Length: 245
Image 1 (cartoon, one colour):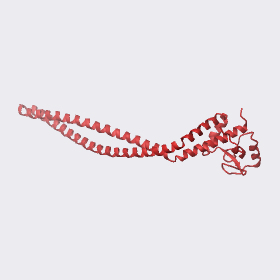
Image 2: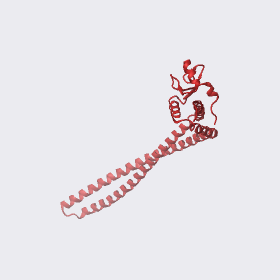
Image 3: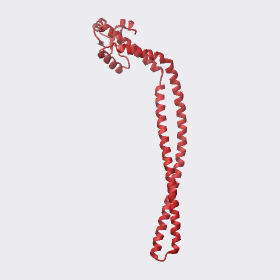
Image 4: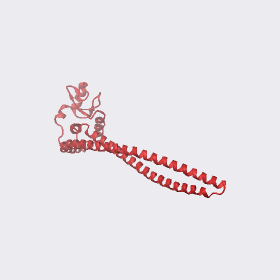
């Protein structure tokens, strides 16, 4: 079972490893966010293009179907118009005339629908052309940013892997309560959970530490936190003798 001194050394070493990992991540700048944003924009644009293509295809099908209906209505119209010459009663004349008017209306509505579908698809084609150009530009931008990011990742990959391996070895040596407290404080305090007492002050918030508390910290018999910022306090001797795994 590890002593309190060893636990504090593990915590100090873990903090140092996490700092280095943070700086490696920081060295990537906004590249990871930019790559993620460009990917999201590209995916959204692709969905728009696919949706517009489906709408255009549906309009084409509707147009062809409507043209077929117009052709059928025109044939019926000719038939009814020819029948007018053979009617013998006013009733028959009125019935055929009614059918002729209905077919004319059907043809007119169909032609209007076909025209509207032509106009809509012309607009869709223009929009598709613009979206395809935007997609091409996004793909170029994404490719460029991914290459930049890969250069940084490749330059730091070995060091990052070694640091993560060190972190794993430190984590397994810490008791669960200590690790939970460390992670909770680190998350709340911008990544810094363990700080040394420097010139009788907290190395995190720089507030003065009472002499009695400094003595307690230096005894290395319990985990003590700063009364102001809540970070874990360690004596500078621990910083100078961090555990190397």
